[in-house]
Amino acid sequence: MRIHTKGVQAGLFISFEGIDGAGKSTHIQGLADAFRELGRAVVLTREPGGTPLAEKLRTLVLNDAMDPLCEALLMFAARRDHLRQVIEPALQRGEVVLCDRFTDATFAYQGYGRGFDLAVLRQLEQWVQGRDDGEGVRQPDLTLWFDLDPAIAAARLADARSPDRFEALPVEFFSRVAGGYHQRQQADPDRFERIEANQSIEAVWRSVQAALVARGWLGGRTNP
Image 1: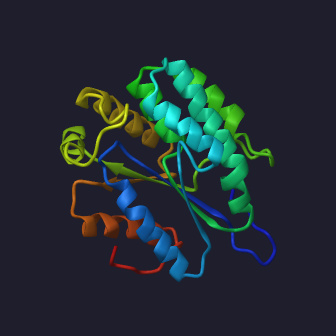
Image 2: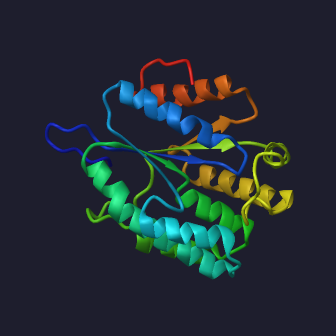
């Protein structure tokens, strides 16, 4: 249920998900530009991160060794601040929030990748994302899942930059993460749109555009 305020368009929350190297970040700016052409105010953000506190926690999570429980708690602590300070206020104002990763990433990376207890993650999800209006937990209106073979993703990352603590993990880890995304998609198919990421940038953009057009949120736009 999206928020409506008299005279204000409903806020829209879209997350971008996928393993490292899937190319999701390439299309966030293009989608932001497309919404702005329609006169929508757009907030571009990311997880972990999005607020000064959450960015500090991001640095810890990506660089410091810790056990899976510490990792999960820091992820959800960053998410709580992000929701309260950025995401919920933007949605209340009727803005479009485009977020590079959200809770699905925590389940995929910490849950399926690390093997951390999914029941604990579900409990944290309930506590952290519980909505003030009583409408369950805050989830994106749409999740664009950029699905790519982990071996291809690893090849893309090989020469891109110095890897962080996650990017340096073996292909087998990312295979488990990819499986986790598949499980999340199966559990909530109406929210997810699978994007075949092993295509040209132009073809991937057309898939992104088609998902938004099908929901009536975006007009025709063919260039990234």
